[in-house]
Structures are given as C-alpha cells and as structure tokens.
Length: 516
Ligand SMILES: Cc1cc2nc3c(=O)[nH]c(=O)nc-3n(C[C@H](O)[C@H](O)[C@H](O)COP(=O)(O)OP(=O)(O)OC[C@H]3O[C@@H](n4cnc5c(N)ncnc54)[C@H](O)[C@@H]3O)c2cc1C
Picture 1 (tube, rainbow, N blue to C red):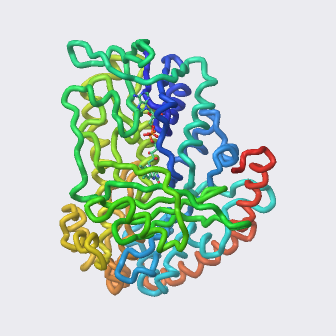
Picture 2: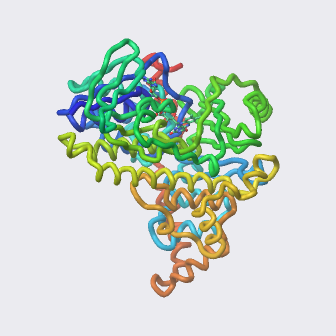
Picture 3: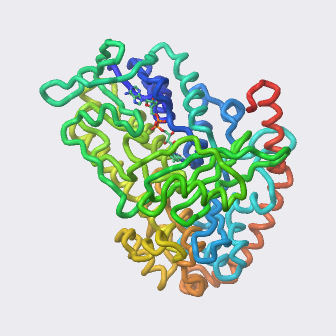
C-alpha cells in the first residue's frame, strides 16, 4: 500500500515514524514544504509523548535521553494556573498524575487533602506534586538514569519534528519530498488518486494523511468535509508567541505556567535554553498591539512577538473521509490550555497506525472502520472541549472578556451538570470520560478545586459514606496520607534536584554544541 503524508510538522513526522516502523511493507512518502514551515512556539505535552518514547522507543529507534539532548526538552510535572479567579495573584498547581487513589471511589486521598490540608499542600497527595514541592526530579543520583517515566515534557515542536524525521528517514520504506502540494486529484467516488506538486510532479497513493496544519491541504478537497467550530465555548482565536531568555544560571520550572490575563491567558513553557511564551486572546476584546502592551506591563519588560497566529477552535466533523485522514492541527485545535494538541495528535496517529492500518487497502479503507474511527475522534475532541471550558469557570470578572465568560454563554451541557453536581457531591473517577488519552478525574479534580468549584465540606462526608464497606475510612485515609508522605520521602532520597537534572543535560548539550 502506498501511504502519502502531507506535512512535515510534529504531526507529519510522528505519524510517518510510527507508520514506517510499524508497517515495513507499506511505502510511506512525506511531502512537506520547508518554505511554508511549521508551527513551533514552545509546546507543553502530556505523558503520552513520554509513553511513546519509552514504551515504543526501541521499536521506533528513539531513546528518551537522546530525545532530551537533541530537542532541549525539559520535564513537566504540573501546570501552574495563575489568576483564574477574582484573586488574580492566586494560583493552583494541577499535577499531571492526580492523587494516588484516583481510581478508587471515593478518591480518598484527594478528599482528605481537600478538607484537611492547606490548598497549597493539596499537590502532595500526588507524586509529581510532591516532587515539585521538594524541588527534586525523578532522575537518579547514582546512575544518572530516570527512576521512572511518570513525567510529561516541555518541547520545541520544530525540533521534535526534526528528531522524528531523522529517525524515520533511515527506513527503506520512507521517502521525502520537499515541495508544495497545490492540488488533489479525486476519482469518481471522491477518493484521492494523487496530489499535484508546485514543481509540476504528481504523487499517487492509496491512503493520504493530511498533516498540513491549519491549511488542511487535502481535507478541503474531500466531499462533505465540514469544520465544527468550538468558538461559542472556546472563544480565544489569536496567539501572540514570543520567547523569554533565561537570566544567567536560571533554572527552568518543572511546570508549565498558564497565567490568566485580561483577555485570555499567557503560556510560559520552560525549555532547556529559553522559555516559549505567548498570549492567547479573543480578538473581539483586544488587538495584537494592545495585547502586547498588556503583556509587557505585566512582565515589566519588552517582548518581541514572533508572529500573530489566527485560529478557529474546533474539529473536523469527520477526521476520516474516504481515503483521506487528518491528523494534527488539520484535524482539530482547541487552544493550548492543558497541552492537548500534540497529545491528541499522537493519540490519533497511534490509533490509526496501530489499530486501523492493515496489510491491504480494502481492510484499511472501509466505511465501518471510517465511521468508528470518526466517532472515537469526535468524542475525544468534544471531551477535551468540556475539560478546557471548565477552566474558565472560576468567576473572574474584572474585564469585559471575563464578564462575557461569566454570562455562562461558553458553558457546555456537561460542564453545567458537573458544576451543579459538585455542589452536592464530590465527583468520582466514574463521572468522567475514561479511555486511552482522556482527561479523567485526575486532571479535572485539581482544576475544579483550584477554581473553588468543589464542595470541600462534602469531601469528608464522602469518606464517611464509605464507612460500612471499608471501615473508618476517615481515619484510615489520614494514616494513608502520612504513610504516603513517608513513602515519597524515602523514594526521593536517591533523586537529583531539578536543578541538577537540568545542569546534567545542559552540559551534554553544550559539549555537543547543541545549546542556543
Ligand atoms: C498558539 C499555539 C500554541 C500552541 N501550544 C501548544 C502546546 O502548548 N502544546 C501542544 O501540544 N500543542 C500546542 N500547539 C499546537 C502544536 O504546535 C501543534 O499541534 C504541533 O506543532 C503539530 O502541528 P502540525 O504538525 O499539525 O502542523 P504544522 O506544524 O503547522 O505543520 C504543517 C506542515 O504542513 C506543511 N504544509 C502546509 N501546507 C503545505 C502544502 N501546501 N504543501 C506541502 N506541505 C505543506 C508545512 O510546511 C508543515 O510542514 C499550539 C499551537 C498554537 C497555534
């Protein structure tokens, strides 16, 4: 089977890498236009990227340490959400791993933490939160190896794409064309037969994967293609990326910062050599010039925006039509909050390559597979939409933008129900979507607590209700919390500080001439 991928960003090369290695009998052609370039603003990711590197790294020819060295990635244990309520200097941390009892009903440690701990100590019921609190990394002192891989990463998407490209192009079944796709030729059934290049060439294929980013170069030709906009629920539509340099010896934080502003929020993503930053806002409330001024005031320094990026939050109605499948920004974009873009790109790519692509075109392209893949993809993005919408429900009301949010117009039905339910009972893991890659209770819980949308008094009642089955869960949990702290403390004795981890990899990068 001939598979043609259009696009050489993270989506294109991650998909191509998985496809070449997993399907050595299919030929994989990647067409990218280096003149057009890729999006790459300093990206925060989820544990999914780490998982691919660690669990499939050997199969893909990737190595986690090498990835850090070559791309300048850093470890991410949480997101720090600042200014999302009317107390605009306040913040909360959302660790990426949730609590240690997150799969139980009730989530006993989290409930205990809510009711009994100071809000800033709540992170300590999570392992990643504990590491942040103690300033350690999960990188071992004695061996300079990772003790585990329970982290996510901050990355530069441009370098990630290059890393995957290098790994991909060593394969015999991989082919690379640097040219611009200017047209797609469809047969009478509406299937793509070939794509036409600016240079005049024509590339034929059986299956076409559109990883062309916001330009949706192939999908826009497909019969019945439709963009489902999420603007009503997620109204931000403009990004103003910029970079911040570190001061001498400054150590990056082990978390992403999502700092709410007057008309949206600012991301700060600490990479090895710089911070990737940007302001995402809604252009109905401010302009790029005013947005820049706003950020310069809050940071107390001038910034140099790289470009203005316009986007329409939403997804394809069908990510897969006939023999064309979209992956990456061409498939969906829901704004950068919670780092769901590269995450969902990898989920989509992995699902397609591992589960749906078969030996023959007939076993791969059929209406049943197409419909079920589309249902899964729609659900994943619609669920992410709910998760992002709830972040804005902290009641901040100091500007027209936040007053607009407070009218309730952006709420989805699920968010409405969840907020109402949370007044009466603590949600459990079963109240949230549960499938590979979903944002479950672990992530929702800290956000809802952070924006004061959980009824903390109910937290212990939940434990009391569980008494007939589990004994005195309230006492058991208090003990479990102290035992957990001891366990965490024992574990980190052999861990390097976060600063030592950074210095170790900074030195290797400098020795190899890779630092900026
Ligand atoms: C403001 C902003 C902030 C973001 N922050 C995050 C974040 O924190 N975390 C996260 O996970 N993600 C984030 N993202 C998304 C992330 O950058 C993308 O998911 C990731 O870079 C993958 O993009 P892509 O490969 O789909 O598209 P792109 O990077 O845009 O790549 C598209 C490719 O298609 C090629 N191409 C386009 N047209 C043609 C043509 N006609 N012919 C040939 N080739 C063509 C381009 O040259 C390029 O190679 C953010 C995005 C934006 C806009």
